[in-house]
Each structure stands twice: as structure tokens, then as C-alpha cells.
Image 1 (spheres, rainbow, N blue to C red):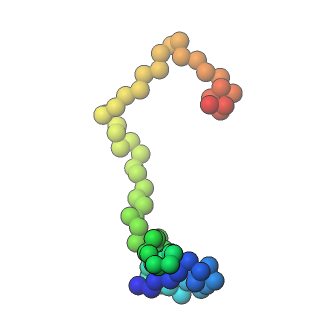
Image 2 (tube, rainbow, N blue to C red):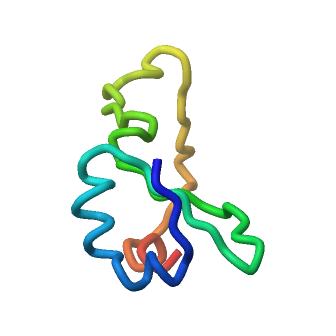
Image 3 (cartoon, rainbow, N blue to C red):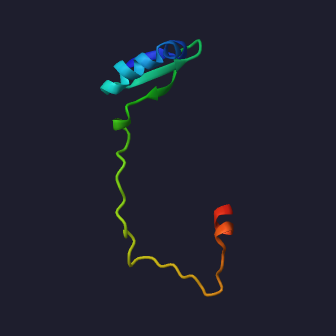
Length: 80
């Protein structure tokens, strides 16, 4: 895992993304005189995987009732 200062990252940002992050290596960003580690750039694949939610997941477990006196125009709906 590579550690870089903000200045180094600003100077070499494109190269960091191409050579490190795209190859699966996180980059730690340090800041200030003490070079305190404040952030990390990680490959998107290391984040929680995005899963498609199936339609009808709550079917039979919830309901929605619209009463007869409920009215809203398309303009009111889009303006909300």
C-alpha cells in the first residue's frame, strides 16, 4: 500500500489511478506537517458489491392504499 502526500497526489493523480488503483492497490493520502493519514483511494471493486434488488421483494408484506379523494396533478407531482 503506497502513501502519498496531497501535493504528490495532485502532481501524479492520473498516473496513480492508472498504475496503482486500477491494478487493485489502495493509496493512502497524508496531509499536513505531521503527514497524518487522512484518506484512502481504493479500487471500486473493494467496496461493498452493488447487487440488483429483485422486484417484488416485499410482495405480500406491505400495502399501499390510495383513497378516492386523493388527487394530484402531473404538474404538482413533478414540482414536488
